Length: 353
Image (cartoon, rainbow, N blue to C red; front, top):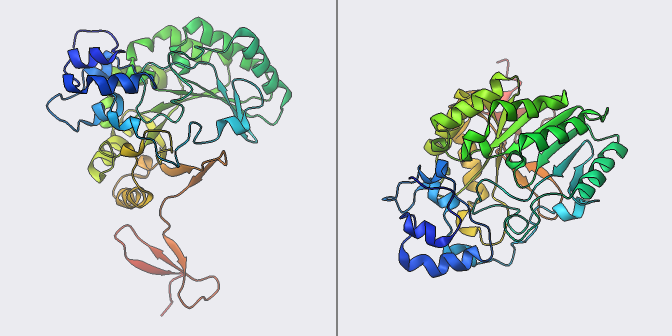
């Protein structure tokens, strides 16, 4: 597809990614939520497949206009833990620093969809950034700073380098983590200069990449990720469990293996948040737990993420994967039944007889 980033509904129709009769619905969706589809993803879509997993993630859908009563504009409670603009301090030893409110691509299930995109402030003002950094300096329990947004890698390497150097000067901050989709959404941005900017803080730097389907890891995306890893920056992944995208053992297994082949450790598999207009993409928890059981023992331990739910209201993440250990039925203290990957149950400690 020889085009730039698609931002207007009419462009999706012109490129054959939506039928003309859907244009009015797409316009209604775009009037509320940001839309942007870069060539790296648009080129992956199979236009003959009405349930293409790439299209489901990024092409606007009329289903987004249906908002359920339990959905929220702030589904994980960022606002509850934002002492100053740009900071979310939910956990004692780490804080989010939301540098920008724009992304290279806008996911149709984004939990911050009411806070990002056109019409919102593009980035923290110089004053707001200074105040946010002062907050980090004054809270010495903050061991890790997570750069997020929006996507911090839409910043120029010059601006990213400046932030990293300011974080480098905060002695109690030991870890900087960068949350991004750019290596898969716009791999050309991961230049040698951008990688040098990531390393400018001289702290331990990690990159957490958001990937939901194995097809997103194109050859160009793999080159971009290799550039990061070869520079000594470890990569982990975050994926969202999505209906019609990665909610089968085959699709999820292919994704997890592809990540490890790229030297990216699967970190979190997120249960879909209760963001407005996203119910058509959410699975139920039973599906997620069954998938994790299907991965257990059949895929390498390197491929196993933690299945988590971000508790609505700002109470943080909790693991919600299956449990393989139970007390024995007779309740004997210190004795358990443990289930193996084939579903067989075993006593522990084993009965010596």
